Length: 98
Image (cartoon, rainbow, N blue to C red; front, side):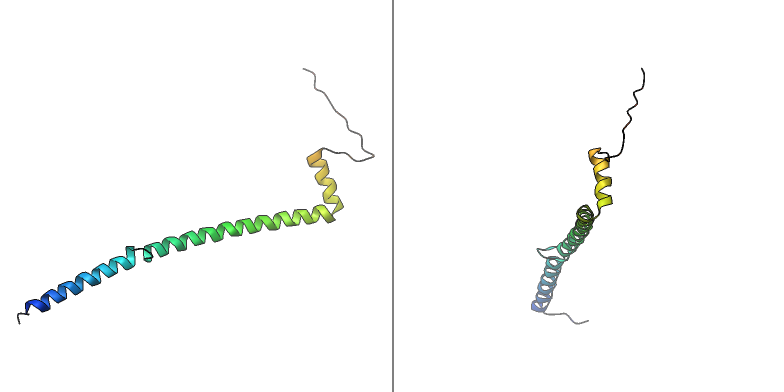
């Protein structure tokens, strides 16, 4: 076993410290792998939310289209939401005795 000179040993230790520090910065530093992973998860959540909003927009667009173009749908909606009745219909109200 050969004894190394002191400057080679110090250079090896310094190189190990520098490499270790750089590795730490790559993983935990600003813009490191951990931050990248967090950003990727955040992006996935935002994409899921966008998909839900897009699906809701499609549902609303279809409802608007039916309200503009489907007389039966308009009539059904008016009956349910506005409690309207047709021209030839008679409404019976039954009161329950106490």
